[in-house]
Length: 191
Image (tube, rainbow, N blue to C red; front, top):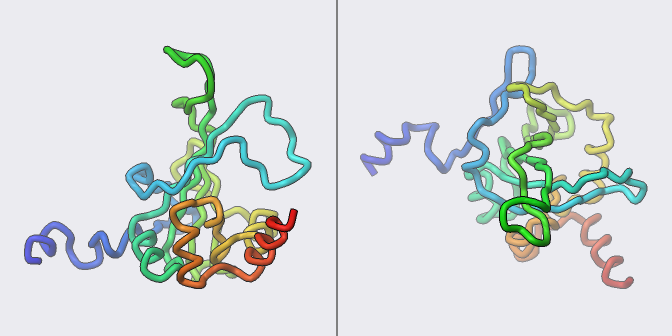
C-alpha cells in the first residue's frame, strides 16, 4: 500500500482514471495515451443512417474508454462523471504483405472523436469533440444529430453499449439498459 501511494499519489491512482483536460477557451485537449486505455470494440463500415452516402473506401472504428470509467462500469453498469470514450477511425486496406482476402487496419488515422461525460460542464451531461490532426478540439454543438441519436438509441446513458459485446451483458445484469434501447431490441427480435 505504501508503494502504491508513492507510485500513484492521491488523485492520480489508476482507480480514479483519466481526467479530461480543457483549455481556458473550453477546448478539449487530445488524450494522447488513449491507445493504452481499455479497448471495447471495432466496427467496420458502420453507419447510423439508412441513407448513408457510400464512402468509396472501407473504414474501421476502434473504441477505447478510460480505465477508471471501465472499472466503475464493471461494478455498477453505469458511467461516472469524467468518463471518456475515444473513437478512432482508421482506413481499411485489403492489399498488402501476404494478405489474400479480407481487410486490415492501416496506419492512416482518418479522425478521432471523443464522447465525454461531465454533468457540470455540458447541459446534456455529455459532450462530443472531433479531433483532426490538432491537439485540441471545440465541442460539437449540442444541436448536432449525434446528441439526439445517442439520446434515442444508446443502450446505457447515451453510450452505444449495444456494440460492446463485453459490456452489454453487464448492463443487462445490473439493470441499466435504457428504456428506448430495450424497446428497440424487442422490435428487432420480432423482425
